[in-house]
Image 1 (spheres, rainbow, N blue to C red):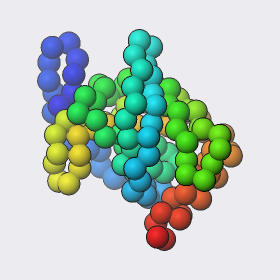
Image 2: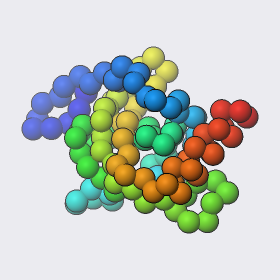
Image 3: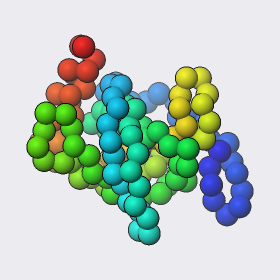
Length: 123
């Protein structure tokens, strides 16, 4: 279900359309909207986006700015993103949270994320 205008609408996870598989991770994510700042943890990631675990997901379509530091890196990645789907309760093994699609990532950030995903998937 999602928040918005007093109505609660059931949102199902989108059909799997990712070009690249996501890798499981427990990564702190700081993000902000126009009027609020949040700090949560991501449970998976790829160069297209990530899933943020939260019991208070933002509505689909919400734009936000994310910042996170990948393991073995010294410079945080900053990227704009958009909430593309929400899950407000644990269903089918998915914790409550929201799927985020990244905006334009730098080639360096893409390379860092892809390297991390390869390492995590081969671990």
